Image 1: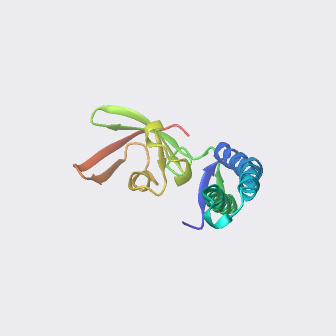
Image 2 (image 1 turned 30 degrees about the vertical axis):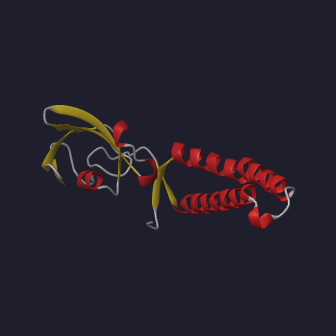
Length: 154
């Protein structure tokens, strides 16, 4: 992971809520499973206990990853620079005669189907720094794809 993780305000808030759920609700559920499994006796042959311990390890790893991501988070605000594409920019491209609205986001929020392109992806990197009218060319398995920047919305 890089030392910086770009994320929107909404994405950061969602991540914080998810972290709180893992720390409270999930931990409590796992603790109850562990207690119930301990009551069953011999822990060395207790599948329920083993599964609960694995769930606990997974939960704690998720918590650590989320906390690390929150520490590294750089909140993306709405960009004021409409002259060139940067992280947080919303813009329209044209490729193969079709227009598409895209947004450059951090890797945690990338969702190409929704038009949210990671700043770390080849496509995202190709758009960064481009201006209205510029072309971005991307090498794909099917050959080179060309995108023309039609407008930068924000």
